[in-house]
Structures are given as C-alpha cells and as structure tokens.
Length: 335
View 1 (cartoon, rainbow, N blue to C red):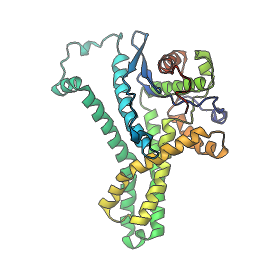
View 2 (view 1 turned 90 degrees about the vertical axis):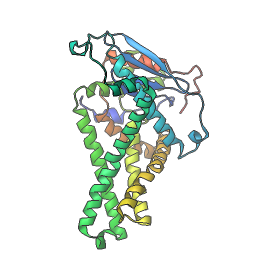
View 3 (view 1 turned 30 degrees about the vertical axis):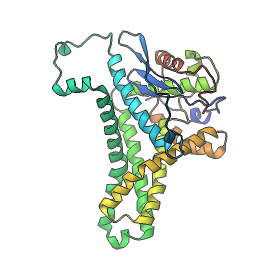
View 4 (view 1 turned 30 degrees about the horizontal axis):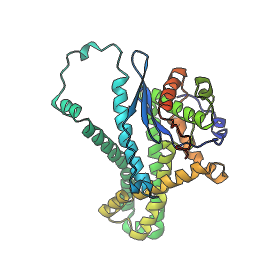
C-alpha cells in the first residue's frame, strides 16, 4: 500500500460541480454509474481497453424517491449491479492472455453449467450472500461477543439502563474495530492493491470531472484519491449510526433476550442504512460547512486502506468508463 500524506486529505477542495456519477473498482477495471447509463471499462489480457454499456432501467420507482427509504433500495441495486460488473470484469480481464495449460479441456461441473446458463440467478445469489456475510461479520458477531460478556456479568447488572448504554457503546466500538481489521487484512491479500489503485483512479477521475477540467491522465493524476462521497464513507456512517440506533432500541426494548435482541438488530438495518444515506447526501451537498467537513473526515481517513495511487494505464481505464456515462445535459447529474 502506498504511503499517505495527511495533507492530501486536508487539501481536498470543494468541487465546482458535485456529480451523482459514482463508480466501483473491478478486476483490472472500473464501473461508472451515470444518471442514464452504466458502463464498465476493463483492461484485457492483451492490453486493450474493453468498454461495455450495462443495462440500466430508466424507470425510478416511487420508493426510490422517498427519504430514508431510497437509501436501502439504491444500496441493494448498486450491490447487485456491482456484483454483476465484478464477475464480468474477471472474465474480460483474462481475454487475450495466454491460457494456462491445465485449464485446456477442463470440463465444467453440473453446478458450474447451471450457473453459467442462469447468470441472473448467480448474480442475485452472490449479492444476497454478500449482504448476509456483512450482516454476520459486522452486525451479529460484535453483538454476540458483547451479549456473551453481559451474560457472564450477570443479569442483575447487565439489565440496568445505564449498563445497556455501555454495552451498546462497547458493541459499536467492537464493530468499528472489526471493520478496521477487515480492511487491514483485505489490503494484505495478493492482488488487492490493484483493485485499490483502480478505486483511487475512480475517485481522481470523478474529482477531475467535478473540477471542470478535461479528462486527461495528467489532469486526473494531480487530484486527490480521497473523495467525500465514497462507499467507504457510507459504511463508516452505517457503523457509527448503528451505535446510536441500537443504544436507543436497547433502552426502549431491552437487550436481555437472545432471539429478540438478534432480531432487532437485523430489522433495524434498513433504518440505519436509510439514515446514513440521507446524512451522506446532506454532507455531500454542504461540504463548505465546517461541521460537514468534520463528519467527512473519518470516512476519508478510512479510504487510505481502500484506495492507492494509480498509474497512467489505470487512469486510462477510468477515463474510458467515465466518458461512457457523462450525460449530454450537464444538469442531469447534479448531486
């Protein structure tokens, strides 16, 4: 992972234009999502850049416009779309590369054949599995650890209102620690730094576009790889807001019963996501405000573990993805 200059975060300037265009790092590529089009750009094994426009429905449901509800819907749709793009990029990035000898003539299993012919099922199941793993790791695991600790202390102490607050705060801190460790361990995985570099290129390209500058490699590289409206910042908000919501629920309902306590945490996840989404939107619109800039700092700091400085070839891929989704009407993508 490349070294981080703290001034790189402090020197982020407010954008001339805040765009709704967002993206996601892929395997040797980037997905960009615009107001009308979604596209992926992937560096193939032969060195060329492959660009594909993905299907994007123009229909926006009523619930996608309702505050505190739209966040959950958009998060799920983005997860499914991102999973689809990630799986496609894995295949595309290998095109043109020499095929390993051991793969030649290898037969697919019955499960592989079924999933290959039912691609939408595979993408949906992958997205759902990702959600379940995240809920288990970041929500239920810290709760279970604290719940067991509370039982060891005894119900006479753990069931008091003030102890409920302390236990929920401890659970929130533990949740943050697990998330931080997850990012640290993920950064050590072989090849993940390439993904972080593409993530950094995505941020730099969007920042260059928001600054009103031509999308050239030279212009993009001079921008910061940290962006206040990033998915990493959203995840931090979710974890932070969960402390408040679960603490209030613990005081009002109680944390003593195992199944009730677990069910409450699962049922409140959409509420937490909805609140976090609205806060992220508000902070993104008012980044000239000192308080809002302060709220952005933790998420920006965490991006040092999910982004790295890209090189010119990686930026070229980001440019190709960005140019494919920029709307003809400049007002269509205003944040």
